[in-house]
Length: 338
Image 1: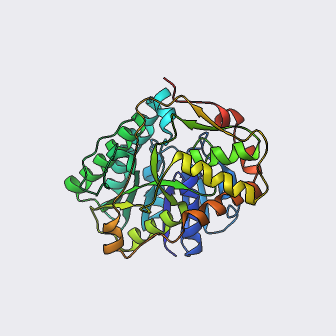
Image 2: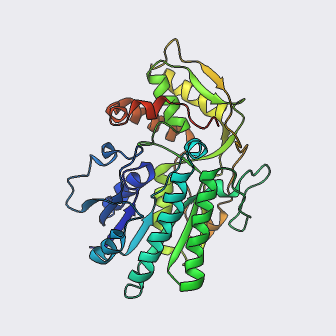
Image 3: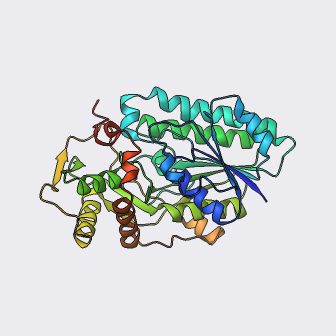
């Protein structure tokens, strides 16, 4: 049975990816340092699976190399990262430590490991935010990086580091840049689960500025399926954009969720849109051109926005204990106002 390592597997995308890999009969090793955004609730369905192993470890730690040698995985998916833009505005140092220093440590460990394990692939998961504002058209993999936030800059730095290890050391790495994910198990500091949390708790819905910021939305399991196709068929040293080609602004997302809440009879009197002060340096629009992965790997997203939002709302409605696994201050506290 082939083994795969997933870093950041207690998080949103990581835990969904682990679920997919287990269904595809891989032995999965989950490495996570357990931060505020980590949740053991995300893995409770398979934590007793004999083909699942959890290891508490920071990607900055020297044990990373020992884990690689012990399990000899066929692939390493690196999803360990600080991800919330607002937190990067308030405290950027954590993003430098995790997203740059941590990736450097993984790469150095992988460089040593790879000398005698040349078939193991390292797949680094990044974001569309590295491209910055894309006011017209859609950014291809050749688009210049122009990050606007400390978070996006730290991810851009990690992408450059990973690629440099391909060019310099010929390491078998692949870099992916994905659009905004949504779906089950996402921390409610992010827009969609935050809005759902407030709807379920009869609170106003906070929307930055005028709500015109546009994002390309992809259902998390579609992203995970894309990552699996890249593991199977992706070309070493390449970048792959992963997106849905569907953009909506924050007001449109909010109205979609209000409509869905009505269908679940979950809408209450205090649930109203509340425009709040925008965060500094807020990009207006992200949009990816995902033609490459569609053409080269024959992948395309399967989940419509309507279906995905319905499934997402339903999951939070039926998993209210998920919120109890998180600190309340991490759910309701406003960040990124500096």
